[in-house]
Length: 246
Image (cartoon, rainbow, N blue to C red; front, side, top):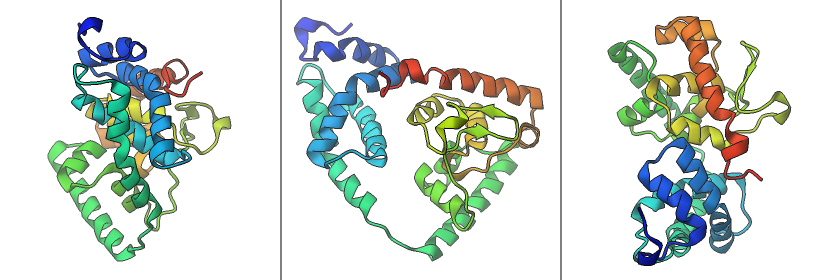
């Protein structure tokens, strides 16, 4: 247990940090992000300027990555986060620099499709994006860009229209991507990751109805439905655990 008398960890962070340090899970990650939200927003304004959804998402990811190098005996967590998030300056420059390289994207799309077929043959089922990333070296963002090339696919509308089931919110929320979905996804195993990818259209994945997804996964439609319900239960915790909750 981290003792208050032997470290410089602020009281506001003590409970969520102690829980996260004991075991990083979707729940402890979310609680930690909720506690860090004012610090993250302050660092964005200091290093970049007015927050926008893309830079906020990047900052949250960087903040969670920076927790591993934090030592409560050496300083305050808020100071550590401000220093760690200096990298947002570079991230913001990259975000605002648009490079049009359709030939490279086309080549990467071919490489990604080939890798997917190879892994499918080895695994006996559709590979998850995490497995594809390990195999190809592509980041999830790169895979999303490659898959959407000349496809007109829009990412982020969390509605399984083929099954009449809504994931991560309601249809009234419209075409927006939930940051909570990223946290839930990171805590899943490969089987549930693949189901979530093809249900929510994550990273440019094509949304598939249950019977098609069941065939690709070598499972029954009922098993797919049960897996979706488990994922849905985690997504439903957004209002209680979301770092942006009020």
